[in-house]
Length: 112
Image 1 (tube, rainbow, N blue to C red):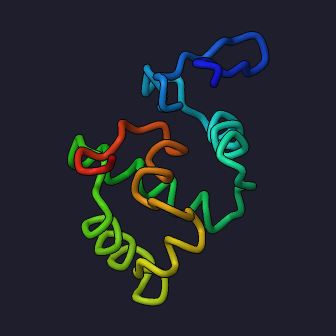
Image 2: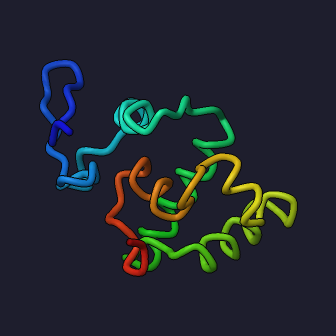
C-alpha cells in the first residue's frame, strides 16, 4: 500500500498501516481520502464521531480504545449513539482503530 496520499499540491505521509505521520496534516478532505482508502464513504454521522475523537485526543493526548470511545460518544451524543453496535456499523471491524485512522490520530495502544 502506498505510504502517502495526494491532496491538491501536497503529499501527506502515512505510516505502513495508513495512519498520518504528522497529525497536523489532518483536515476533513484528508479524512475523506483516508476513509476511501478503507472502503468507506464518510457520512455526517462518521464525521460527527471523527470530530469527537479529535476532541478526545486534544483533551487527553491519546486515541481511545473501544470502551472509552463508546463512553465518550455516549456522553457527547447520547445513549443511542454511545454503543459499540452503532460504532461498528459506522466503522466495521475495529471502530476505535479505524475511526482514529480517519481522524488523523495515532493508533490506539491496545489495537492490533
